[in-house]
Length: 193
Image (cartoon, rainbow, N blue to C red; front, side, top):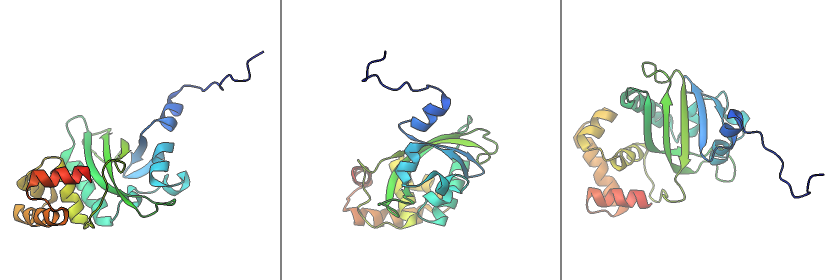
């Protein structure tokens, strides 16, 4: 006879590991969500039916940010197909529906020659340690994310296909919004939220 306090045995297999992982996980094909785990659904406040089979675009604040992020991923994959960045995402449902939040995204395109054909992606909600305090435009959010990654105006301009001078204008706006005197100060304030 088993004791009443014995825990129910959990089958330990790949599906269980995927479903119960402590980080949001997504399998994708052609920028569509093929499958996702419970942590991702909780992070975005969504049901499985609301995300599976849909475009990643549902998780972005704007269509332009979705498109530009797709181009940035293609341009930045390493030789093995790995990519990582921090970006602003949007909750799709639940009590925080529409809320924007910082998210660390990393993953791998299974075929680096076809970056969006199939991939495995991890999402980590950074909102507990980094808040979006100032009202930022889509372009300011992109530039803020690339500044956090340590890119210069020239590299940001190249990545976003805008001039380094335009990047400097956006950086100045961000510095004003966050009350930062220098770029390192701005990055510190962006990271601190």
